[in-house]
Length: 317
Image (cartoon, helix red, strand yellow):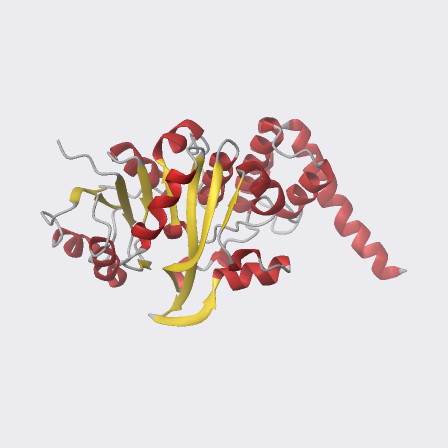
């Protein structure tokens, strides 16, 4: 029985205009020991028709069309991982594409250390199909005032979390990442019902126990378009609630020794107005947070009361 080393999972939802290019970029990889699993989350465009054209093609081991939308791309990740036969997982998002040498150049890094759980590379940003000169490594180097992402590096997962990944999701693009499946399953990164920041949580949970390798080559192409603009959800109530859940796990896991850093990042990622746009849903959200962690909820409320009062006072003096 044929057992592929890599399982490529393509979760798709209403990305019909990207699908042909995405699937062909996977099937055209120079490295050949892989299977492809395509999961459509009840798309309302013509994605189903496009996907059906690939049924029966070599390497396509599974195609699933959901009868109803799951409500979260990370539920599709979980489904695909459960179906996967390979030791290495690639979540190839349906609106991105990859260099033909993506797998060939990244797979060998897993043999350098049996404790490597994540290998990822740099991505070139595309807008409306046009490749920009901008890459994620340039954005990260500027953000952290470093040249760290200009060269390959190997790091312990915990060091990566405390110095970089806690502060900002420095693994910017899921399509640029390979996971060791056994470590993903052990980390159980789908224990929280997350819709927006599930990718960040996956990286944190794997890095909590395993190491990471970064390849500075731009082997992935991230498609920037209106459907994936992150700023649309930044700081809405659901985003705050998801960050609260993730930080509750971080506090309980004891990952970060620097409490000042941990508190600072917790407050930054859960900052919101307690009174603006007050609604029954917001009250229910705070009720849920108070049950998850009374300690963190009290700190959250006090901070979000203190900060605006302090800012207003400083404007008056």
